[in-house]
Length: 366
Image (cartoon, rainbow, N blue to C red; front, top):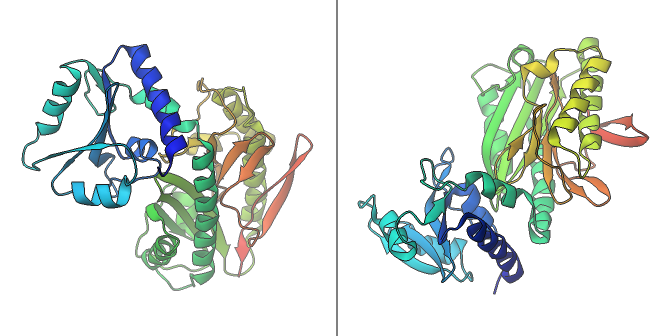
């Protein structure tokens, strides 16, 4: 069976969760959890939806694929082929059919779910299971990460002054789709909008001297995040200094991601790095990233974050100093951080942190 070991490992984790919670079953309804349990299957139609168009019910006696007649054939043929899931189909116009079936199989009130308003919510527990990536997931992430890095850098080399931000967004989306992924977030900022907005949804504004491209790309359910900046001509000295400082903060974040530490401790190192460069309040203006995987940020870092960092987790740190930003996705391995979305084909800033030299993306001058 395809993904046999990965499926077995994840089902073992779910069985342990059910035993711990005293549940007869767990219903997975969110896109992130559907992709996780199906070893990379995807059950989204609308890109802005967190709810999957098919669900997976796992019980002690068997596992089920639940979907309406609209979705079942494609799910079986393209998303869950080879997995030991018994299909149960229902009519799209019967909104309670799925949960009635789950009650019949598990007993009313005896199952947990990740859906909003579930009587027994296991959403938090499922996040903890998702972030512990299997070897197969790490391999998929590495392949996807490189493809995403190549896609955003190709787009960055293709955009030109005079293009609108919307046109640049189209270029970036095309490159991501061509890589086999789906762009779930595309942000573009030209010139002063880089300085003014941390989440710059693309507009009709024309690019003049600088442009920032941001993407979160999803493939097999896993999300890779990356940012690249382009300057058409010499970079302003103030922005150049900020870019150097931002790259160092990013490198500190990577070095701070040590197994056994709490995420809040790593965040504290990041805040201290801002202060060391004289940018005391910049971290207030945008979140700094955190653990990634099947959500853009599975666990967002804050000073009070108690999440324990471990080998096999992925991170997308994204420090920003007004006018610049540094972001890539990396995997924490036994040998330290492994860059997933850097390509070796982009100018880099080398910075030393605790004796380790870490390279982060520079601004490309064209």
